[in-house]
Length: 229
Image 1 (cartoon, rainbow, N blue to C red):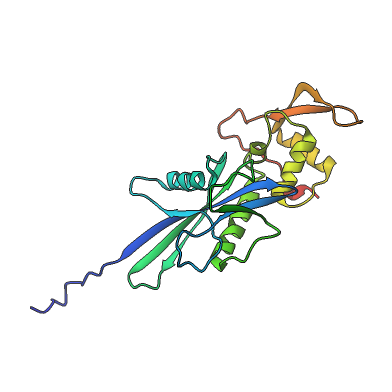
Image 2: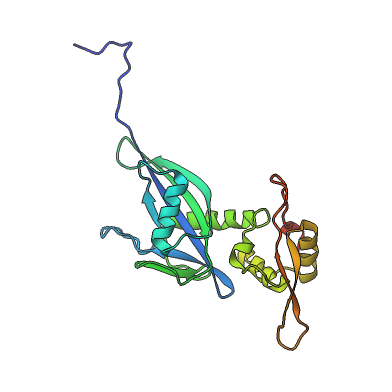
């Protein structure tokens, strides 16, 4: 019996979803990123970001945490979503959605088998989509530096202001003026002095500080890096 004109035909459409994680860590004077070898022997790509599909019982954040732990061997202290992207694949009726995350960890030597760290100034040849995801992740990370306590994830409980400035410069990829940086820290009230001091060579001992989280839940404080030279 022919289909009635008033009855719409249904087509099978498949949606797949995966999570990609860009993991950064300090190495020397720059950030490094963790890349892994594809598990598929047919892949033409030598290096890609850690990635996997989302299991039926997982949230996006849980899947990203699992991917990061599988690549690092431990959970990163910072893991945030950077973007989602998607589009049809070559196969008819299939739409692929990817959700990208960025993470930050202390140690650029932590990696499971099949992974390797590369300095951002010395990346290997990468697929265009992977390179774009890394650029977006790094841009998102740097956009969050003045609003979230990201720098303090890379420091011990107490630190000098020189230590803190060095971490901010590492994350931002540029030098900061010392006096302007300290004025901005004072205005943002994100650190507080301790009674401890640390000797640094032949100069005067440097006072140690600690992170001072905002006392009000909705209080927003940040270091205005757009005002620093």
